[in-house]
Image (cartoon, rainbow, N blue to C red):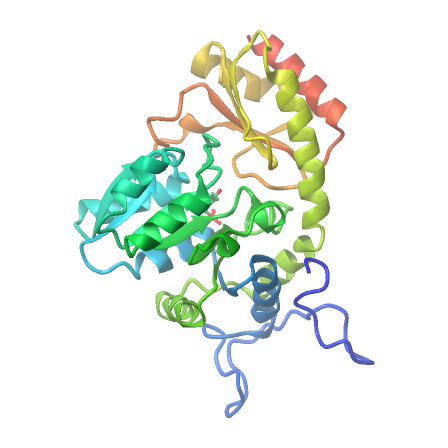
Length: 345
Ligand SMILES: *Cc1c(COP(=O)(O)O)cnc(C)c1O
C-alpha cells in the first residue's frame, strides 16, 4: 500500500508518479474547480494516506491545521477529554479554547483507562495520543474507544508516533486519526503538513469542509515531497524501531540516566537524564552523530530537552530528553549517546 497507492492509472504513457500541479483554479465545469477544495497532487497524497489508515484522508497545511479543524467541530461549551502530555501545540490550543469558554477541557492520564472513561461522561470529544509526546504513555485504545462510544463521545487518535505501519486506530473503532505528516510519514524534515483520516464518509466530508473554510490548505509541492518520502515509510520505521529497542535496552541502567521511557514499539524514546535540566542540555550539546533539534520522525536521529519550550506541560520532567531514531548505524548512535551522556554528566 505504502508503495502502490496514490499513483496515476497504470496505463501506457502515464507517469509512475503523480506530477506536481501548481494551479489554484481549473477550467470550469469539471470535477475540480479551486485548489482550496481539491487539487490533484493533494488528492494523490490523500489516497495514499487513506489506504494506509483504512479511511478517507484530508490533507492539511500542518498537523496543527488538522487539529484545529477537529476542535472546530466541537459544539460551543462542549467537553473535550485530553491527555496531560498531549503534543505541546495541541495541549496549548485546547487550554486556549477552554480559557475563552469555547470548550470545557478535562485532563486525564492517557494510560489510566478508568479515569479516561469517567471523564468521557457527557463529553463531545475524546482526544487520544498513543504513545504520548513526549512521555511515551500508551493508552488502552480498544477499551478507551469502546467506553467513549458508549458515552456518545467522538474519538480522535493522534497516530503520529506509531504511524500506520504499527497501529491503525480506525480498525480499533476510532472515528478520526490525526497525523503530523511533517514527522515520520514524510520522513525527511523538509516540510510541514498534516492529515485527518475518518472511516465515516459523512464525517470526512465535514472535516474537508473545515479545511475549505478555515483555509489550512497544503501546497502541491509539499504533497509531492510527502508522497515521495512516504514510499520508504515501512523501511524507515522498521530500521528506527530496531535501533530504538537496542539503544533503549542499553540505556537502562546507564549511570547518567534515571529513567528510560520506551513502550516497546516505535521509533521514539525518551530518557530522564540524571542531573536534571543542566545535564540534559549538556547531553544535547555534546552529541556529534545525533542532531540537537526539535521535531522527530526524520531519517536523521534528533534529540532535544522538551521543557526548554515554555508551552510544554509542567508534568514533563525538566531533564527529559526525547530521542527520535533515524536510519543511521545503530552502533554509531549508541556510542555517540553514551559518550555524550558521560561527557555531559
Ligand atoms: C508535531 C506534532 C503535531 C503537530 O504537527 P505540525 O505538523 O507541527 O503542525 C501534532 N501531534 C504530534 C504527536 C506531533 O508530534
